[in-house]
Amino acid sequence: MTNYDIIVIGGGHAGCEAAAAAANMGSQTLLITADMTKFAAMSCNPAIGGIAKGQIVREIDALGGYTAVVTDRSSIQFRMLNRSKGPAMWSPRSQCDRFRFSVEWRNILESLPNLFFWQDMVLGLIIENGSVVGVKTVLGASFGARSVILTAGTFLDGLIHVGMSQTCGGRVGELASYGITEQLVALGFEAGRMKTGTPARVDGRTIDFSVMHKQKGDDEGHFSYISGKGFILPQRSCYITHTSVEVHDILKEGFSQSPLFTGIIKGVGPRYCPSIEDKIRTFADKDSHHLFIEPEGVDTNEYYINGFSSSLPMDVQLKALHKVKGLEEAKFFRPGYAIEYDYFPPVQLYHSLETKKIQNLFFAGQINGTTGYEEAAAQGLIAGINAHRKINGESSVTLGREQAYIGVLIDDLVMKGVDEPYRMFTSRAEYRILLRQDNADFRLTTLGYNLGLIKNDRYNNFLRKKQKFAELCDFIKSNNVAADAVNPFLSSVNSSLITQSRKLSDILLRPEVGLSDLISLVPELQSRVGEIDFRTEEILEAVEIFIKYEGYIEREQQTADKIKRLNEIVIPKDFDYSRLKSLSIESRQKLSKIKPATIGQAARIPGVSPADISVLLVYFGR
Image (cartoon, rainbow, N blue to C red):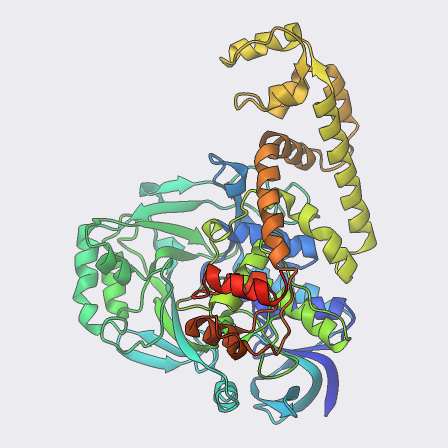
């Protein structure tokens, strides 16, 4: 039996990030996947990022993960969403060539010296004395490991639904995985079923794009802090059309054969990404819904019908699509389908993503009840980091809610659990002004460097950026502009005039004034900017956001620091809550089950009241 430090089960978005992180930190790592041509396969929409998800990808990149790099290498349309709103809401999104995306991931993974591969399916875990020590595969192979990361996606007991037909599988054309769920349940784990779905794929040669609204991307943009400004691949447009009452009426004809409505599907589906039949039923007052027609790559005619996820019979799906403007002659590459799969409620995990029942076993991705490539990749990165640190006797890495969207994601999962597929939104984060997409490197790159995931040359460039940022902020805050130099411009933008010299920062605080305006008006500032010899636009954007929102940022940071103090009060790992009769019964039950590591974590458990927290504070001498 060949032995490794860490085995990663599954080559999806979580598995790829987990394997790369563990290998880059020095662990001899084995990645086991059923199909090595589908690393980080984009099973659903071939896009990365979006609201809150884009922030997560920036954070992965700042820590030394690869999702952002791969996205930039395969992007065929980039857009910064929510530009009309405040910078806390700006979110990058890229439409990707899904074939190139997998190829780029494979190129990166195969370049890592400590990472090895085995194409197979895992049948079960080898467990000794309450700790995982290896895996067994369908082909009869066994591998030893000091730690195992399970990232099975939708493959555990996967069941595909199209109308009244069911097929076993983790994706269309790919076998489901059996044995692991049954083994873990026998060991005392709680498991459940969830459901997700995907729309039909359509032959672009049969789409009439001329009657649809064309949606172009931005002229430039990138996810990774180390990517250049330009695009590598040719850029493609997306298109918008919409359903109608006629389309809805046709879809309703298939409701009697809907596995979703007839009770065949038992798993819980995502509230925020419903199927088209679910939308019609839930929003019965709506006569139409938008559909986004999105390309799957630069070398294919395949298009993704975003907004038309369905598990209805394929003839009903096609008949309805033929009544959509521009899709009258559309031909399927394949119909939409729903898939049910096993997951494990994440309250069974520590914040490190190690399971509470089996030592050195980590879960990451959809197995934890999440949905989305970005959420999975983030969990994979953290699981890979902590698996490596655990076997080397080092403390786990936990990101705070004020530190990263990744911290919000994992804290929500572990402390609150899930009753539906979890998707990240900006509204889930209480410190949105701190957790912007533009400052992910300021928040996390030093941590990535200390962990060994950021190389010296990249870290030195980050330090240069940080220095230039600080110097420019100091200059703008400490230097004045004369009234006669700025008043003509202020008059032109209907902003009140000044009567004496004012700090540049005071002028920049005005909503009508941008940093680029000041640069054109103040030669000394223009000269300072000219001294910045790299990533100039990135630095200028960071400076402008920081100065305009500094007051809000400081207040939010003060609030975060107060809450953070509760996280510094540690609760012993095996503390017996039944001893504290002053706690409510519900509190004792939930605290005993979740085992929070700090008072701050305990305060975020649903059902634990402020009065219960006061009891804990008194008991622990605070």
